[in-house]
Length: 166
Image 1: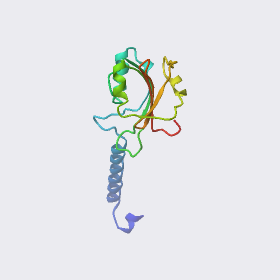
Image 2: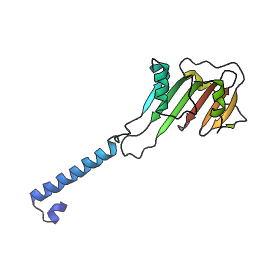
Image 3: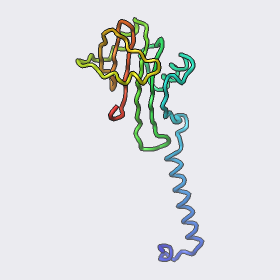
Image 4: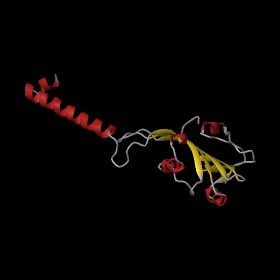
């Protein structure tokens, strides 16, 4: 109708529709196509999915920087990162348990603040091969997460999440 007011012929009208369609397709590709080099790191992974300790630790290091090397770990990682040039938020939930060499504990706690209250460790049951030590735990706040440390066993439970109600 607007084309009739502008007195465009039928061919010009079709060319304009074609150009609009091309622009819309290009915008959709830009918005939804994964960014090269970054890829889509969205995952929901349990450490039990890996057959070796090395593979398990290597996968974890793709998502989080560890303060030191670890002897072993168990985890459940949920990570959602929108692909492409999208405006959606990245969400994550890292529920992790680490076995450390005793001399490494200090490095893990260097930026942590001791908490006056304990944390609910019910989430630990999600971890493959979970085992809650029987010794006394100390609780620390670490950036956006919670560390529960069993010094006697050199075991750290780390719950790190930005998902509401986690």
